[in-house]
Image (cartoon, rainbow, N blue to C red):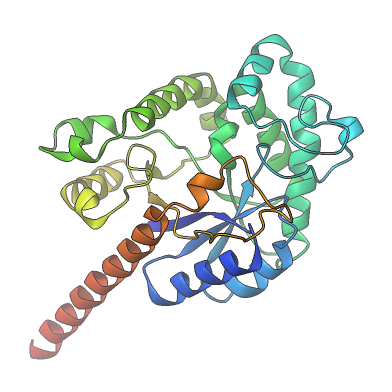
Length: 300
């Protein structure tokens, strides 16, 4: 199975509709909704009938869902999150138990909002904004929340890229961005302490692609490696997740009910429209392949 996932859903109603339109007319089959979005109900209503839904656990932007007095390591007195990945990483080393407990509190609050809007048999798909759940203490707090929920976990994103596939593929390097490659290496290092806990919980995450090519998840970038990733996923008996950011914003739109965002430049990038177009192109290719196979069956 290939999950074509749209991240960062729930910035504002217009962005939600753009993602819904993409799910209706492209290969997109998973939408990951900010756990603290003021527009979570609107996101679920717009997308539930179109694709699977995941929780985009957020500690980087907007306000906390739980009482900020109980999570001082994560948010200020007004509930606004401290947005730094590095800060969380240092806290994971300096105050792991306190951070783990506060993650459990906030993650449970965000997950609870989504579960309240979905059927009782919903199986959890979960990831996080800026992949902070890969930080060891954050990872442990998220896992505690999932266990306490009593729900089956269908997918926990494991954003560790198969860099060897890319290295062995000619000319793919032209689509790399140095900062993305550095992020991929950092997340791989963060993942190492978590792997034992992942196996113990019996979670087998999908093979992942979407960090090294972030901002450039185009058909041209994916074409040389997609088949190889599918073969590797099949060999390892895993699914494959391709991460896209098709839900862009326009000038003058709000972010979490605010006029500005820490990541406004990223959200407004024209590359978001390019990634939406890539999803539509992938859908057209899938449809053409399916039609060709059907014709061969009929002729046979």
